[in-house]
Length: 88
Length: 118
Image (cartoon, rainbow over all chains, first blue to last red; front, side, top):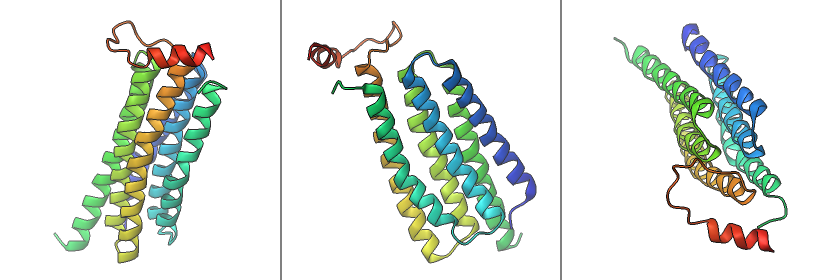
């Protein structure tokens, strides 16, 4: 179905980007940087779910991706509200 | 080359390309100078990367229902990543993080002043 080397390369790239994002969230310096890093971690997670779902030939993989793409927006909005505080 | 093999090669290439674009966004997250350029990198590159990976999944596991779900997921992904990065950058500006010194047009300055005066 899908070669194992493709799974390894893709998951390796996504893991590398999650590590970079964690480094950025750690260093900061502002809360906005951590929020952007969390956004990237979410995108990389969607990609990892897609690859693993195809690898294990799960039926529900497209449903998971669709719901994640729709609902990830809410986490970004609430993070932005949290950064902004009481100011509009 | 049989049709099955073509499908596998094209789908794998799309998956690897999408993951590489997300990784390039992560490198930009480390290297770029301020929060606004970082938000720009994530909003454009990660939206494109996830869209390419969704196309790869649809190619590898093709049926009509997956095609419809994939189209909806790509539309939602492109819309929400653009709007989300815009909202994050605006919230960063309103909470007072400084852009790099070479940022020339600063059209939100008045609104930020009004917000801090209230």
